[in-house]
Image 1: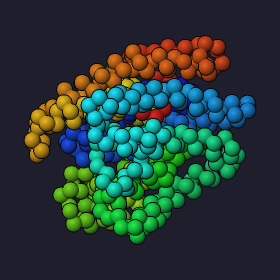
Image 2: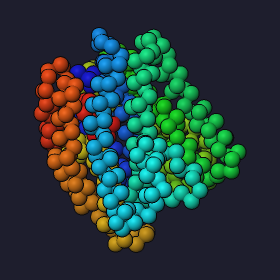
Image 3: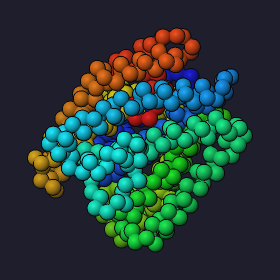
Length: 400
């Protein structure tokens, strides 16, 4: 399992996720929104693996919670709040971003995802993408309490039940919001930005370590191919039964911001299952020689390096595109957008790498000062100190 060692291909998966998100915000590929779903499932797998390992250790629950939360905070908070601080300075000096003063209380409390229904809400590329980090932080805050305070048997019932409950939660939430006058894309987005809408994403990833699926499932390749077939059929069904077929063709049948065909109810779960199956296949102890070319691609130097700094790339990517590239391109000039994507990707990677090496790594080293991995007092994790060296699983959880 991943908590027993570093799995290189998961950094490649993370690289694909961030490239997908960046393709969405550059206007190249609307389907890129699924990169967020991939991040959620991967976070569920990695974080649950860490917590499950801690649960099986002897020790007080309070100490385990403190260890997890401190190590997470040192990995996530410095860059996140550092970025917000820079925006605060530009807001005070230049009044940029213009709506920052309205949303800063929600950004600093990781509740920005609940603002989508506010009157006059509009997208601000400086911070609009941080909604997903709010959901992840809420998961990091609440799920450890659930896991440590529940028995193993109860947890093994609770997680599958919540996976099946998630589509029902989305349906009920949509009905409640519709009764209050929300419609169309705003309605679909409010549902999507709700934390409970992604319980199935985190828990489908989390089932792998909790049930030791990487060891117990004999043919994970079949699970992957089955989930891929299900995703294809479901996407085709969307394409055939929704009037705006051209839009769904470009999204491979999985459009974001729509309520037709009840896509907000079921198609997130279908995608989450596909991504969880992909992770299961990659971490399985049984089929590590299957699809070797695909594995080599995910473990290639550039993908691994991108994956290692994907947290910083996620933080910086949209503001870089919007204020350096967007004004240079005509709205419908897809060819120019595509040509600029590689230099844009290189710039964001360079900025994130500098941020990681000269800022984030200092805080990452503190993790082993306060709570050393393996019990060695003051032992710094050398793998976290610089880009280009293998990052341990706990460091790689979430977007980082």
